[in-house]
Length: 192
Image 1: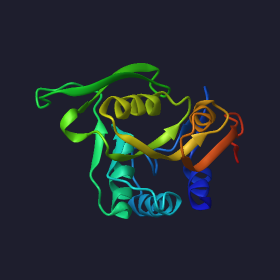
Image 2: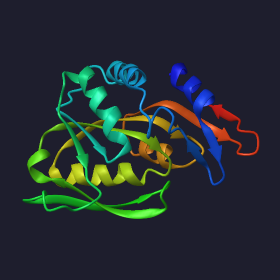
Image 3: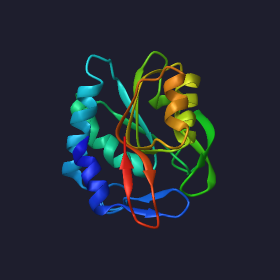
């Protein structure tokens, strides 16, 4: 998606440690019109696939998943929570994931009442680096008996192994922008 690449070039900041900061439009301040066009593109890329629900992880995936859902007949969006609260009751699916950006492990949960056997699920997230978050969501889907129909990613770091690993395992992974290289000294970003 060339428009997303232009946003990344214009508003993104490359930091040391393979960090791409895109908080001006994606995961702090949200450009809802851009999110809508991203959702439209995912709907085109996953056309013909049954989608009963969209599953994401808090917090940055929620906005894009909710806007994208409009393009999938307004299916419900479920998000894996990173923190247990007194509001969460009943049985839950749980797994542990490692966040590349936060360099921290999170215990994530989804209430069993929101994800059922036989449901067709589209996973949506803002970033894909090593694939830890997505592998956790896949594990939750497997525990529920839900079918992962596809994975929609806003920005994939193609120089890290998450995307290649998921594609090798047979997942239909559609990233709207794939960064192949970035240089914190110059700020240059190279797209696939």
